[in-house]
Length: 87
Image 1 (cartoon, one colour):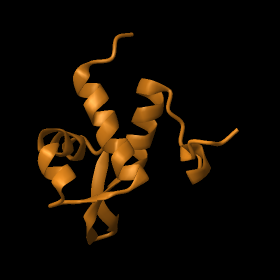
Image 2 (tube, helix red, strand yellow; image 1 turned 30 degrees about the vertical axis):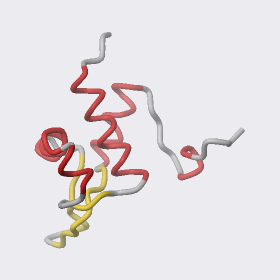
Image 3 (cartoon, helix red, strand yellow; image 1 turned 120 degrees about the vertical axis):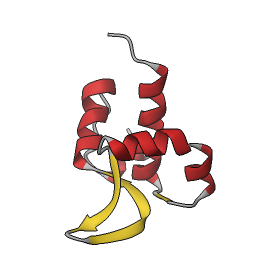
Image 4 (cartoon, one colour; image 1 turned 135 degrees about the vertical axis):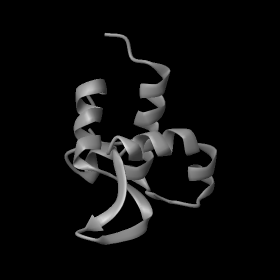
């Protein structure tokens, strides 16, 4: 299966939202506006916390994390998975 450039950019956006989060008006959001909008439109990232409560920060959704796993084999189980020096 070939992975498109668009899928790679969407993965970068989801991973950035997971690792650090980024605000809706951040430099990251502005420079990646097309892919942030795309990821939000298809439910891969959201500013929704719960119910009708929203924040100003983009975070990955469960759907976004499942998409990463299905598309790229990236499994995020805990913050330890992101440590560069883990054994």
